[in-house]
Image (cartoon, rainbow, N blue to C red):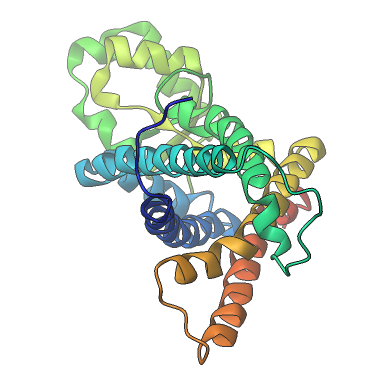
Length: 276
């Protein structure tokens, strides 16, 4: 197999830089997810999702993030393949060096994370781009933007009448929830000013009401835990930021970061399932 000739250390540096960016993103994503635990009818979380979905700079950054994830996966696999090709014959006797267990499992936990990310995208991101059916919401103030033709459409009017009659208004009065996929398609076609958005708050709470989905996501977070135990110190080591004076501090900081991120993610499905 002929692969482009790039030094192994160069690939490792690229992997570390991209991995460092993803470490920061994970902390941001975990913090945002905690908004789901607020019992405000999704007011804060919906506002956050609206900002993330409507801001042009965020949309550009989102595409960049997908590219970063793809680049991290590509470089990691590429590095593993080139390292394997550089030593086609395995040692007859296993090395007794004290290699961190996370290092040996890195490629496998990475593959599992990739599979879990694909499922996560199916549950949420693909709903956002309209490839998978979900549940949607409409900003109440957008209703004032509808023209007379749109409001005269009985099917369009029925969507809003049903929502108001069933009391699907958020506590702050800003959102009309529980718009179906079919209703969303109708509004996009006949009343685009309504601008329906994915209702990630209610979708998340509905999904995490099912035990098998909660268990699946907890397994995902467990895999991330093992991946991060090596990823965090590895970033510092590869970039030459470690030092014998600071290695212990970096190790402790890595453990603190890993536990905070993983527990932060894990507490959402657990507490939602428990109705808290």
